[in-house]
Amino acid sequence: NSFDEECDYLFKAVLIGDSAVGKSNLLSRFAKDEFCLDSKPTIGVEFAYRSIRVGDKIIKAQIWDTAGQERRLVVCDITRRPTFESLQKWLKELREFGSPEMVVVLVGNKSDLAQSREVNLEDGQRLAQLEQVSFMETSAKENLNVEEAFLQMINRIYEIT
Ligand code: GDP
Image (tube, rainbow, N blue to C red; front, side, top):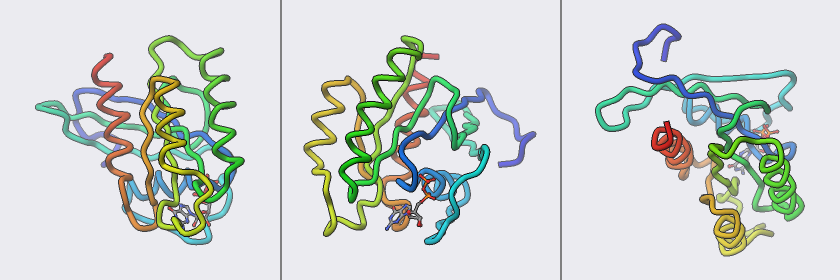
C-alpha cells in the first residue's frame, strides 16, 4: 500500500457521519486491519490508502475521514437512533451540494452490538431504497462486512468512471 505503488486508477472517497459512529475504525480496519476500542476523536483530517483489484485493474483508494469529495460512505451507529436520523440530513446536504455523479453507500456500523440495536436492518434498507443508494451493516470491531462496504463503493465509482 505504499504511495508509489503502481495502479491503474486512483479514487478518492470520504467517510462522513455523526461523531463516534465508527468512521475512523472502519477506515483503519479496511486499510490496516486494525481496530481500537478507545479511539480518540479525529482531529483534522486523516486518510489511508489501499490498493484493490477490480477485474484486471488495480485501483488505489485514498479514503478520507473527513468531508470534501463526491464519493462517500455515510455512516451511522445502529445502537444510536439519532445517528440514523442524521443520515437523512447528510444525504440531503449531499444532494444539494454534490454532483449528480455522486456515489453514496450508507453504512450502519457496530452490528456486533445487535442487542442494543436502535436501527433495524429494514429501516436502513428502506432509506437506501428511497434514496437509490445501497445500505450495509458493518462491524469495524468484528471485521464484518467492512471490506464489502468499501468494495461496494469502489466498484460503483469504477462503474461510472
Ligand atoms: P468516529 O468518530 O466516527 O471516527 O468513530 P471512531 O472510529 O472513533 O469510533 C468511536 C467509538 O466506537 C470508539 O470507541 C470505537 O472503538 C467504537 N467502535 C467503532 N466501530 C465499532 C464497532 O463496529 N463495534 C463496536 N462495538 N464499537 C465500535
